[in-house]
Length: 211
Length: 211
Image 1 (cartoon, rainbow over the protein chains, first blue to last red):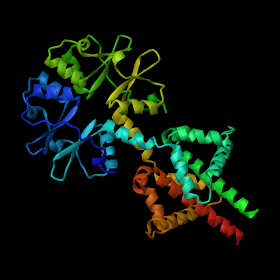
Image 2 (cartoon, rainbow over the protein chains, first blue to last red):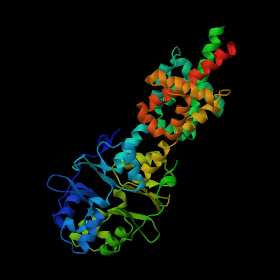
Image 3 (cartoon, one colour):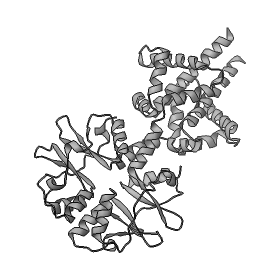
Image 4 (tube, rainbow over the protein chains, first blue to last red):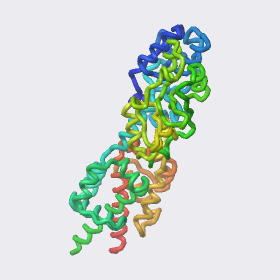
């Protein structure tokens, strides 16, 4: 995934000679805590936050140029950078947002931390049943019912809880991957449970074939 | 995981009668775009953002009480709420941060979107090799070398790329879960690959036992 796939294209920008009152009103109306400062070709020249604006208003500064952080002093990413690295930059520097540039330094978007949260959450929101469907397809010759039966047996072995295959099926239809890894106590444990189910299902298939 | 495990405890708060100039300086110095407004018992009474402050400064408002959003009008969470739900609230409302309360409405933290990004990223930063170690432990009687050999074979079958078991081992030592799911094209595909490796390793074990 690239930065351009998760960035916010619905951003505002300001020019260096804009007055502080106007900037303040623009940022308030669009509810933006940060905004890129661009030249007439929309190339990045700086960055301001609403905290720069409050300080500027208090200190009677006049224009954006008086309060902005120059381009060299801020974190920015290229639209074709891997999203993963941009996400790490954002969390590492504890930034609310960072500007996204083309190869020619034109601002084409802003990467915002709550958009990232949304993207990452969506990955976690994959239903567990999808993973089982992929598993069924992979384990050729194994039916869905055999898979659910094995899952119920493994659950009982691990938790002592008696659960029917139908109940298990209902659970994974509702549960997301995110809930599952938090419920099983971590990614490795969730995965180990899946492997155990796969192993049991194969063992039962082999046993049946021998009869 | 609960909200209190991922919230920022290093937050600032302000009282309703604080002057706007002082609030502005406090938020700038601590680099906070938002802050809870609390009474003398540290109970939440409202919430302000730096955009409320810029508007207040422009319009010559005097105190926090003149600009704040009352408690009833804002999103807040309890410290014992599941972190997952709070994360969804944050991304759903596109909020930079939300206050975290005790049962008595005392503010004990602030949940910030970049802290959430950090938490979610850490989950993705688990090394793939950890997952294989968990797999080896689960598949009793399977050695690490057998696992790496099966992984190299599956990789070749799926990608056509010849890779030695040692190279595969090196790759998973460096790769994270996040990289792996983005490289394999999604969570389901990543899991399916692992299941295929588990299946092959068992098939080879069974074949050897029969000889």
